Length: 73
Image (cartoon, rainbow, N blue to C red):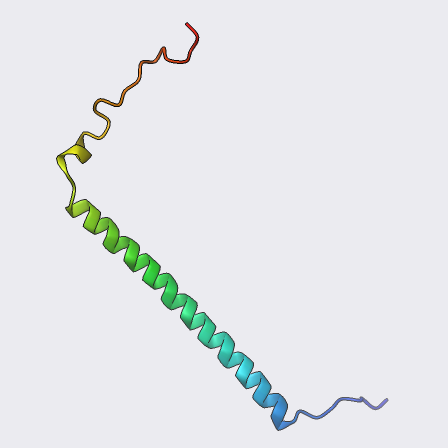
């Protein structure tokens, strides 16, 4: 039984190397994007927290509906 396996050539190794490079750089890019989204969200939340207005403390004042609304009584 002789195996009909083609020897690995330099071109095949270059293709594999290029594929691994593309996958590696894509992974790095996704990690940078995820970190950027997380950091941006944290900065935005801190900015919003530091720039609160007095209305933010009483956001539910005046917006209450009676409990009988829409009940059919």
